[in-house]
Length: 454
Image 1 (tube, helix red, strand yellow):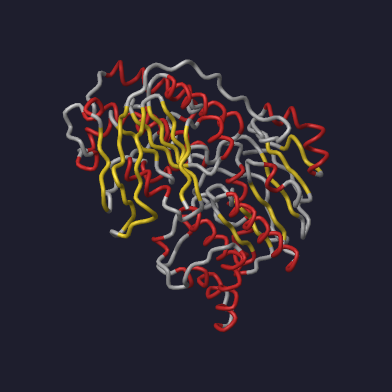
Image 2: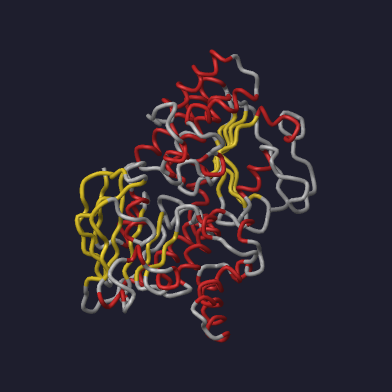
């Protein structure tokens, strides 16, 4: 990002918008003083309370896009207390703050609960609780509700506003979905992809005056929803996977009741439900990456194609063309130092010719708006770009079944619509899609059936 001139007054609540890759996360990291001197070039000045952000880090609380990267300690209570301990808060007061912050964000778990046992959405609440416990003067939030269920979205937003009202803290929040925050912020600032600000003002004025223009740039404007794909007629469906009395969970502890389901070709199945209900665990089990606690996931003869009936016993190369999985955290599946090389991993494992591999990679780079980033390091991409790359890596081997965990995370309205159209075409052409999602618009547009876990 470049050419940014912006002044935020104490106590303001600012919603920062912009298309995927506009530099929103970079700006928040700079505000928090965690952009290192070796991370690119910089010019101009950035001050918080008149000082360089790196010199006053304790005054700014940052919640980043990837909650796993913000979890530090093994137990929930200790993790929330960590920031307060570094600030020298008295011990008795620390634990009062810990309990209060956890209650504010709706994370109702024991203080000695293992942080590794939390779901992605629960970790997001944990990260926010740790920031709120520090009572910083500036709170910067990078898509804090992205992996939360609808109830959690409201709880977290309201918790942030309560803290701001009680302490007078300044709030800067990045969120693609305008409707979540538009009624509780004082100001909307929209960053341009090429640099600078294209809109700045009261939410009602910006959204009414420039709503159509902003929607065309990929900003989520409620009055201008993104287009949904036209669906094609589908051929005959057949069963590709069957869950037989499936009990799923981790550490051999089952979640919920036994699950019975046939997964069909040319069919999109959505898995929704509250944070911590086991959606990701079920998806990984159906994808052959996590062993069932009981029961079985059985592949059809056509899908198995000689690999045996149980996906959990397949080798990684056998999974490549049969079941592709996109993890909740895209960084967990990155293996190389460039975007192009990342997309080549699967095709190379399949021993495709150079011409076929290059054709697949070039097509995916174009369709997922990654062509300008082909030589970039995957770990330096924005959250939305990382998500699109993770989807592309799974598609590169053209699996018959595609399992996706929160596929629309970090997407602006344009890339959301394009990703939706891509998945819809896969389904219409005969593939099976299993998608874990809290994005109800995505579910309504794509899913043929929905499973709700409680």
